[in-house]
Length: 217
Ligand code: CDP
Image (cartoon, rainbow, N blue to C red; front, top):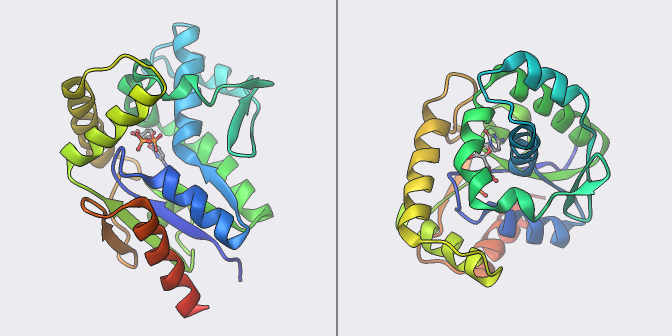
């Protein structure tokens, strides 16, 4: 059986930081599915294609090639890893991620990657859908205020000018769209271990996950 690890949770819960470290610890490939939805959003916005314009969105996706290189997401030979994290993408991504055709295309790619490598995959529908047979599933949460604070600090460190209240509002809005959309909404898988990281540091969360997995291996 593959050692696949699914990590889901709401916006800004620290999934990608934690997932990267867990992947390193076990020598697995890290797949950031949020980055993939963000990349489609970025490319669509560059071409002024709205989320409701499904025909052009499908054509656009056909023209995109996507792969990860050491945690960097490369789309049509361009490293988009930094640009996809900017607020303009965050504010729009949930609308594009609600579109059936977008999800079908990206889930297909994600399943293909997980078929080829043992992976740590993070997102919203990994434990419930994409890797529903994964032997290890975690659901990472924290209060919206704590998540907004972390995202604010992260962007400030990158010298991106942001306002805390805007980040908090974006996170609350995104969580709402992600957890109420029709197709594979954000929800904890029944067999996922829930971790509330509101008052836990990165190392503490990683150690908890690593110990949990090592105990069962
Ligand atoms: O890093 P952050 O928690 O802010 O979000 P992300 O993981 O980069 O995901 C960005 C957005 O992509 C989410 O708000 C969802 O709308 C969408 N997404 C999704 O629908 N399904 C996934 N498996 C991963 C992300």
